[in-house]
Amino acid sequence: MTVPRHPFAYRDFRYLWTARICAMLGHSGLVVALGWAIYDEARLSMGIRAAALRLGLIGLVQFLPILLLSPVTGLAADRFDRRKVVRFALLGQWLCPAALTLLAWGPGQSLYALYLAAALFSAARAFYMPAMNALPAALVPRQTLPQAIAISAIAGRIGGISGPVLGGFAYALGAVWAFALCAALLAVAILLQLRIRPIVQRPIAGNSRALAQMLDGFRYVMGNRLLLGAISLDMFAVLLGGTNALLPIFARDVLHVGPEGLGALRAASSAGALVMASWLSWRPVHVNVGTKMLLAVAIYGIATIGFGLSRALPLSVLCLIILGAADMVSVYIRQSLVQIATPDDRRGRVGAISGLFIAGSNELGEMESGVAAALLGPVGAVLLGGAGAILLAGLWARLFPELPAARRFEQVDPG
Image 1 (cartoon, rainbow, N blue to C red):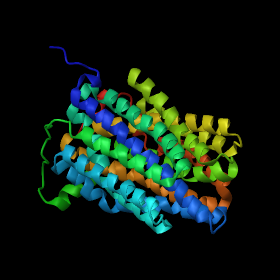
Image 2 (image 1 turned 180 degrees about the vertical axis):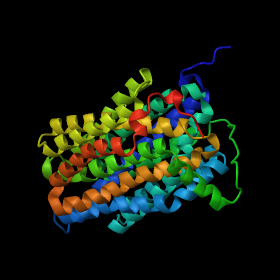
Image 3 (image 1 turned 30 degrees about the horizontal axis):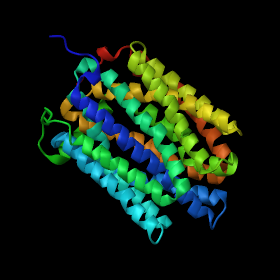
């Protein structure tokens, strides 16, 4: 009997894929709603640079739960049924926009309430991501996994495109509508996850002590130069070149396009990533995977500089589309390496370490962007970050020669 090679041939993967879309719609819509609400609230009493710092603080607020919980979340994904971990994590995420809906409907939200919701949502996602990212390997054969990762990225990017647009337009009607929409989408994701059947999960090998098992994932990443180089390259590129935290500033005070324009800016990078993920699902990367990752990071930096120099919405959107496409190549190669080069009983813990690195770039990158914007202005912060990403690609090629030496995914051996 011929093994079907396309991931959609597997029923449970289809449910997983659709649930990922709904969860990402809710998440990305909430990001837009929270960002606009925090910046708008701050601008009532302070100037652009001071409000930019308040906006950047949301990155720190979201990163701290991931930092503190990452050892536990990875172990949970390896010790317990990953389906159940995902379901409970989605329930925790749902509670945040549900509570904000009630606050917006009644007394109104303060900066403190918005920061608290962001922190709790991030804590729930800290459990969600390692388990969710490890599930495809249990639902499709190993030879189909890179294609499944690309298709999973399509689901994430569909949510990343539509969520900000929906969130922006819903927020234009009122904060309560934006938060309620996000809660509804996360509820649908929970229902879809309940349809996934039991999976075969390899038990954790080695020392049975929880602390030793938590440290094992960290030791595995640090001992694998290819994984360490790929994960850290992606982390520092986004940390330096990230623009997402400053998009409310560009929408309101640089491009003057309002919340609807903010939704378009938020969706642009996901649109570029979606196009690239679709291409990769049809024509996966087969050769020179490490070199292509380095080139993608350099292009990411160039597009970031272009966005910083733009003063027209169409050009800004175009730069963000290119930025998103380049980032997708980097993410696709990193995630493929992490899943293929990691044994099943370590996937949750290694995924949590990878998630911590990436959260460090995304969430701390927002903090860094806010501080840089407070010191240099939003345009100066973006230009500096783009230049840093370009330099990083060249530096990592020298520090981690295993990256440019990596030719094919199938040559990577799980330890």
